[in-house]
Amino acid sequence: MDCGACALKIENELKRLPGVGDVNVKVGPERLSFAFDEDRTSRKAIEDRIRSLGYRRHYPPQRAARGCRCRRRPVP
Image 1 (cartoon, helix red, strand yellow):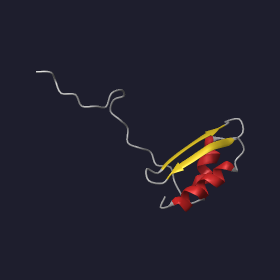
Image 2 (cartoon, one colour):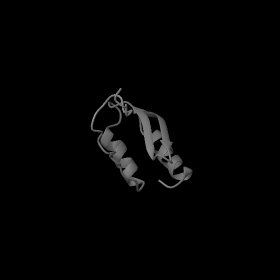
Image 3 (cartoon, helix red, strand yellow):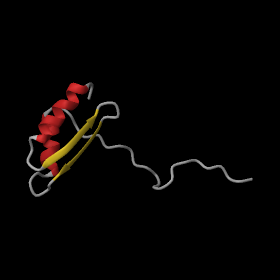
Image 4 (tube, helix red, strand yellow):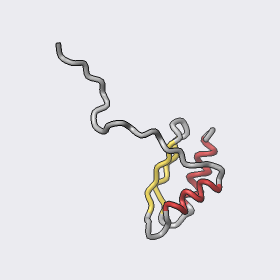
C-alpha cells in the first residue's frame, strides 16, 4: 500500500461486502482491521476481494514469547 487513496479503495470495497463494518486501514504500518459477521461473509471472500484489488495478505513474523516485551536488567 502506497498512499491514502489505496487505503480508501480497500475500505470502500470491504464495506460493500455484507456483514463487514468498522473497516480501518492504516497506510504507514500497512494494517487492516475490521469487524464482520461470518454468517454473511467468509474470511476467504474478504481475502479474495482484497486480492482482486491487487493486494495480498502479509503475515507478520511470529513472536517468540507472549507477555511482557520489555528487557529487564537483573538486579545486582
